[in-house]
Image 1 (cartoon, rainbow, N blue to C red):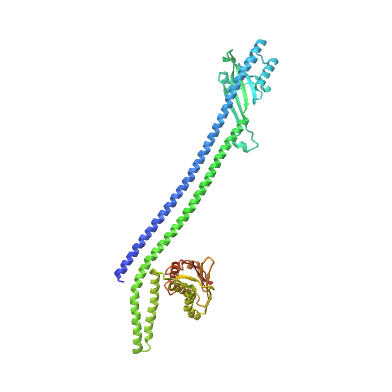
Image 2 (cartoon, rainbow, N blue to C red):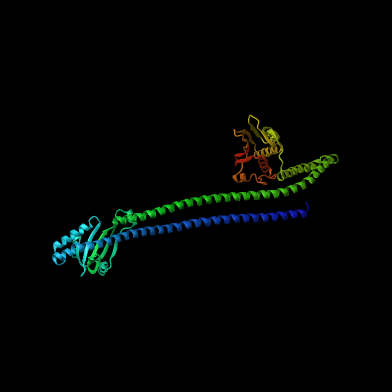
Length: 497
């Protein structure tokens, strides 16, 4: 290759790396953008759910409060109606007869008081009325009450009494307790409705007159209704909260699952991109290596042939110096082996499949390395399956793969040891071949890089041997695994379908 060509190749490689790095950066930016988008969606979902929860609680509270107001309004209307009926009955059945009989109304008269008391007690009996009180119109004093101790008390009417005395019926609620009171047995929940209406004269037509004779106060106990309202409020809030909690858990489950799926897909995508980058890198590297190796191989053959001719001539002209030419021959052989490895790794291999017993290929490779193993005090122990293992394979390629594994195992036992070769075939027709040595072993870091092209921990070699083995095994739809521990040996296992 000329310098110009070399420069062009370097320029192409630099441009390719720049383009590739740009592609990786773009892919990572897209991945990061996708993760950020999902994170924003996740935060938006939880925020929206929180807002919905708050709105739902406010809406539930508003609905329950509205229900409470409706129920209390109904009770107030009923009390006003009851008070109006009392006004009619008391005037017709007590005031008029008392005026006719006694000439005037005097509740200090026990007979009049008892008659009025019997009349009112009969009217409100069974109506859950706590008390009925009649105030005098001339002063804020209680003239009559179903609660005897209240009779004669002054200034108990308050603002409501003043409003009723001016002709305006009104009511007020007296509460104690809340929703939280339902969770405690110590706090009493109670509710009273006090209704004040002007005690008017009644015309013969049944309509109320303008003259106000006093004020009637009706006190009704609404504790049971109030407790029912509080329970309704608590149920609405509890149901709403439970539904939102379920929605939150479902959403969290969906988001968590989606997050895991996205992370898994992102990892798979990154691994795929990394593998693709590595494959493309190796493809470009292989093309360059194949070109360089091809250019070297031809002149290398010429150098070797020339050295062999030179050796023969030196033997005749200067006997004893032919070892110098032999050095050239040996080194060219070694260089030729390296170039061949480069070519085998770089150029695509076309399989020449034929049915053959894998034991035949193994025994051939073992026979080749047997003498080398004996020199290093290495015992090769073969435990092959009893039955032949017939498979469609490329014999030459598989032989080279087995040979590489055996040579690596022998090199890993410089002080001697045992090399165990085993084969088996399972019921599921999975073929297993294993090569175990008792050599120096490898660390986890080296094991993870052992099939990387050009990786080697030896002073000699290209680092392509096991990379070529891996390619050969994968070309046969197989799988190769490595287990190793430092100073405990290495086990290489091949699986074929």
